[in-house]
Amino acid sequence: MLHLMHLVGARPQFIKAAALSQAIYTHFSTQIKESLVHSGQHYDYRMSGLFFEELGLPKPVFNCAVGSGSHAQQTGNTMVQLEQYMQESKPHVLLVYGDTNTTLAGALVASKLHIPVVHVEAGLRSFNRQMPEELNRIITDRLSERLYTITPHSMNCLRTEGLDQQALVVGDVMYDAALSFADKAKDQALVIEGEFALVTLHRAENVDQPERLKGYLSALDQLAKQQELRLLFPMHPRVKAELDAQGIDLKVYSSFVVEEPLSYLSTLKHISAAQWVATDSGGLQKEAFFAQKPVCILRSETEWVEMVESNSACLLSPNFNVEDTQRWLNKHTVTDPTPWFGQGNAAQTILMDLLKQFKPS
Ligand code: UD1
Image (cartoon, helix red, strand yellow):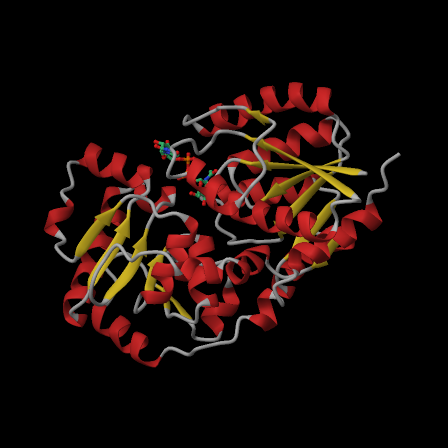
């Protein structure tokens, strides 16, 4: 049996690991043994426990319980505990996902213990080194023995860095998850009535700079008023902390309807019911694109260039022009996601490849 260990810590990683875990259960249970370690980067029930319940993820065999802290604290504390645990449990392969501090910690620890690291969602680049995620991606890709990219564009990024030999384009495990959980999501209750758009913000470069944050809140509020709809805003704890610290009262932006962070199934339901989605989240922008909703990306660049090039998404800066955005929403293009994001079987492709690449001794 090949022992695969998933390392997860933040919301999008629970979704990605769930797609792999489902495929192991359905197709490879006689060849692959899985275990899951949680770094504890996300720890609130609505940011973590709820996802485990909904997605049917295996119970963590170990939780580093690192919680919040500076980048060095989060990464370093995960490393110390993970090293000790992996020395005892000796998995054949460590699977790391995306670009969080948890991902980086896993890549550093496993590679130094000579345990092969496999990176799911490799090759993403924003070319913006102000983002902590960009640094995490570059190092993780460099340390990984096998790299699974979602799109040919990501493969080109790896080629430029001389990393394409160990890489494979497989499609998106988040697309697998969106397809396989779509039916269950339909049964979820809506938390808002009438026409609405779904808005999320959480990236440090937006949230930790009050002028940027207010610039987005204000422009989105004006756009919503022109369109006579409300803005459902499931608030990430980072945003809540920043609004409190800055004394910003969301009531000023009266189109916003604040909610607790939504579960995965509820997010899928609200995307499909929304008129449009505005977000700085990498995962949510894709999920909106999968649901063929117009996506306003609240950033100056995106790793998912295909969505912008096909006119299915637009990039918006803080204090964006409301009339232009209104016009864009009226003429955006609806695009089939499969040419870029796969056929919904990315997880199976990854596992078949892993069984070929890593034979247990
Ligand atoms: C992290 C990832 C980001 C990913 C996102 C998904 C890094 C550098 N960033 O950002 O790439 O897209 O997760 O959500 O790894 N907090 C709580 N409860 C929680 C979790 C966080 O209150 O359960 C608060 C804490 O005050 C914390 C802040 O939110 O300081 C930010 O959390 P953190 O994990 O550092 O980064 P995210 O913004 O969630």
